Image (cartoon, rainbow, N blue to C red; front, side, top):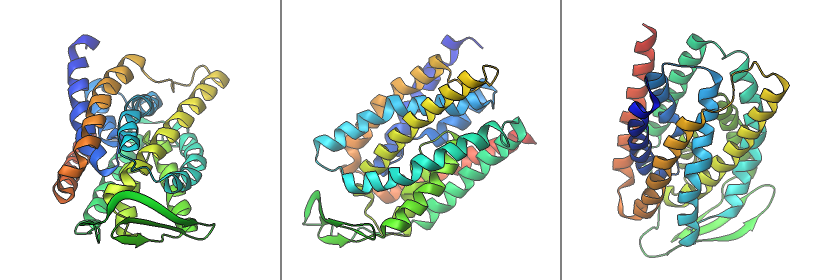
Amino acid sequence: MDFAAYAPLLIAAAFFISLVCSTVGVSGAFLLLPLQVLVLNSTSPALSSTNQLFNILATPAGILRFLKEGRMLWSLALVLCAGTLPGLFLGLYLRTSLLAGARSFTLFAAAVLLFTGFSLWRAKGKKCPGMGTGSMIPRVLSCTRKRLTFVYGDATYAPSVPALVLLSLGVGIVGGAYGIGGGAIMSPFLVSLFGLPVHELSAATLFSTFMTAVASTMASLVLHALDPNLNILPDLKVGLALGLGGMAGMYCGARLQKRLSQDFLRRLLLVLVVLAALTLLLRLA
């Protein structure tokens, strides 16, 4: 199929997916990969790299919006990066070795989507305490090797730093293999396991996604230089089309976040995730 024929579909899909996903701190790359598999009929490692190119282009729009509103919690963002960045290199190795085959990668992608759906379902009903009258600007009280303590709204949060790093390490491995920043997996568990507020963690997870995408793309370039026969370079046309729609969707989603119901968005994401997983599994039948 000619690129001009499916480019509008990629742009529109990236806009809608990014619009919805960015409101909960997710870039939407985890849903764009199944879309590429179905539209492009390919499961090569290049798809994962193209997804990371999308993250590089799209996430800064949402990050800048959160920065403008003063809602970036840098301490949390850097702690998450400390785990995801080392993890992605192992994930990238798995993608180019054990998961290089079409069937194995499709099964892995479907499993990641179903696991993401489970984590979204597990996070349902989690409320952000004290969001009514307090300041929506986060304020760090302390950050040590053991615990990060900050105030947001009317509540104080104190998640364990080692636990955050361990979670983000696992997310980095999965994200590196799947071709996502990992926010789709990270955000639900930050809510369900650590009780963090969705509105606050969104900026940090998007920043972690951006840094992971940059590192993953650089690693892909190095791997291709070492082995030119390795089909791991991103598809620039597809990446730019997705990035164009993603930039607009990400900015709008970050701006609309405070006005939208997180429960509704979480349910919508859950439906999209499960449908994408089932579509991939049916493709194998």
